[in-house]
Image (cartoon, rainbow, N blue to C red; front, side, top):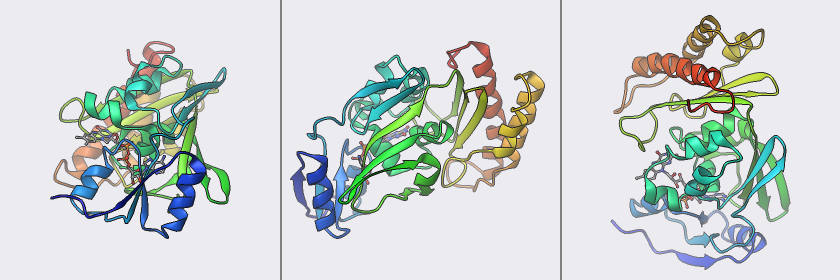
Length: 280
Ligand SMILES: Cc1cc2nc3c(=O)[nH]c(=O)nc-3n(C[C@H](O)[C@H](O)[C@H](O)COP(=O)(O)OP(=O)(O)OC[C@H]3O[C@@H](n4cnc5c(N)ncnc54)[C@H](O)[C@@H]3O)c2cc1C
């Protein structure tokens, strides 16, 4: 099937893009890498009257070290560029798990966050690190914390007139990433990020609900002492106990819960294995 007809605007600035979205009264959509939107259009799951192409807007493709311990990723930074950068090793590792070479060379950070696929990797990282998403709209800019951004499967709190311009994330001291997928490059059945920031452990799990899950009880269990086999096992069990994954064509809810415990254990164990390199 081919997409329905649409008008096309190649925006030259953020202001022009958000004004065009506002003028389209809910009938406009941004296109960035097109890796998620193009299939949606082809299947006619969306029929926007206007596509606003943001790829030529200057200033959205940079990676900036904003401080010793934080980094800003422009909305147009491709997954392949995230893989190559060295400032944020967790992001570099995770980006390598997104799809395949062609998808990574077109897909963007802003697009992945805005698309809010429950099984996508970058929203899980954003949730684990309490990323701050910068958003522009016709009436100015605002910042949204990741916890307030993801509100449902493929659903964010962005309005139809807004666009993501960048994402700011802390750089964890220690981290671990573990994903269960049928083949490398597939969306994760269960994706776990564990990260230590300013001495506090955070965990986020993807693929087990409509939005990334932050297990408050498991994080509290890790607050009182060093990571050991025992505390890791307790935190992994608490993480799995807190979810109610549904059964779908890919896996049963019970399987996802069991794998959540195992992959949380793996992510935390990797985080302890080698400081500054959770990929060990
Ligand atoms: C075969 C295949 C396999 C894939 N595997 C994976 C995988 O394993 N893991 C994974 O995470 N992803 C996977 N993807 C998705 C891929 O990572 C996409 O690149 C990403 O989800 C969307 O980024 P994009 O730039 O292509 O966005 P687009 O497709 O251009 O847009 C996606 C949505 O986000 C909106 N949008 C885009 N940019 C912005 C912005 N700056 N502000 C506000 N809204 C915006 C669009 O309007 C649209 O609704 C896969 C895709 C394909 C086709």
